[in-house]
Length: 317
Image (cartoon, rainbow, N blue to C red; front, side, top):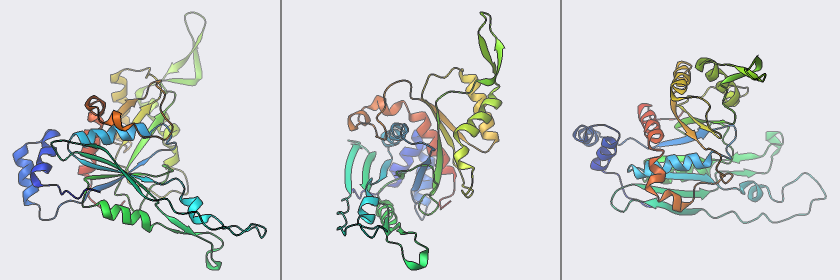
């Protein structure tokens, strides 16, 4: 991984792109005795298959704005490696564990004349050891590989984005910030349980207010966060992705955002995936991320998310 350090001038330029004054940002950057460590961001979602593209678009927008971004991805086959040959069946033949996957690093995009950088690093996050007599048959999980990977990247990157295999569980040990990605299949603008007769004899749902729609979205798309046995988690915002055209206008969405903000869920933006086919659980292609227009489309969401991260204290959840 590259080891270039962020200078005060580079930090000031990034701040000025978000609307601040360069001279004030430079003064703050040069007077800080200890540089602020990068946030380790964990996106939360009930289902992640259609959301990789959104995360890649946000990361690309950050990189084009001058930030050094690392996508730290969990390797797929850690379980096969750590538990191969381990079983309770007495008839199971003894087999040698498979070789652990080697970490891979790829440069997705690098600015030719600035600090902007987008890197993808895939490695094992944890190892699991066979059950011992003192832990009631459960395998021992060791997450030191992830901790080491994050520690190695702290001095190199401005933002570290964790990409786990499963996105529905918070990471209180490693992550310093959590942002929810809500995936919408059918936008709740009408009540499907109550219908009214239409002009042509057809039935149509009773329209919902923006506040009612927001309540339905919280229950339908964010319910996985509130059930047992999860502990409370500090959320830094919510980003919505609709997989279909939205049946409401911008004023309606502003009303939804206001109610989300009232409920403690800071709204960070709306993304429309549309009907285009998206590869399941795959980031955008490197050629897409090298296209400036690709990153610019998601600059508003990326800027709001960057502001939310800068506003929260550095530290663990």
